[in-house]
Image (cartoon, rainbow, N blue to C red; front, side, top):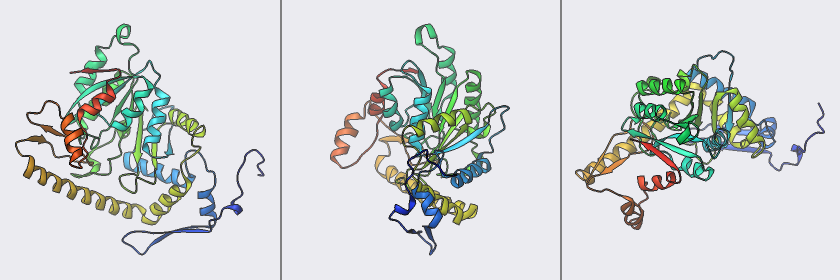
Length: 362
């Protein structure tokens, strides 16, 4: 077909002939040239390079085995980092008069995006095991639309190694949360960038919300940032096709498609590794962060015993501490710690991001 309908630049004018990347710890190289390089440098389909999209879909089916849902297909789209997919999902699902259920505390990056939207952020209490299902249920059962406005239609959760608490939901809690979502017809926004950074046990022992999604109500957000490179800005969203289609429409009207070069690099790497190489790399990542966690907690035990309490995270990169005898750590964190060249996050800062219009059930 000869297309006269768009402004596709001619690849003959691109000044790049070959791009070669040396992989760490091996003599293997990734080389892009000819058709593969042309495809990476050219405009590409909004859901991502077809070969990479297909490979990731295959991996999602192998990893999560989402159940079939009568009449609803699932799809996958590649995004410019997981945050890109999340922001588009928030835009799709939320207007200024809507309410969103969020864990308390939750990821400051999402709060920073949600705050200007003006929607109500309904805080659900968490403990060492993550979101408390009973608090979620109580919030929804007590909701009075005449007083509280439109009932929330979505729950935003970070189920594995949560940022900032480090908590991971148990299978029992996930099942109860999913049952509550089914009863109250909630979409579950499963933000899971630390899913592969499992520090204790095997990830097969921790099924995702996507794996139990018999109602097609889960939008799952995955990221390469923690396991390949944060600067590559590649993530992917999996969920019901009607919702993925809406995210794709948003992308078409904003950034067109994720970056082709980084997609081509990831595609080549995954093809070169195969499943065994992928698992070997993940083991190395988990071993590294497990060592980092253990050294950090050893240091904390040596310096903070009797001054703070904390739990040992089983996944992710975060440790949430409770300072004993300190009611408000904001001044300590934002002034004294900064003066000592240490950056930390505190509940006070997260509370300010929530404070524009939030509600909490305790």
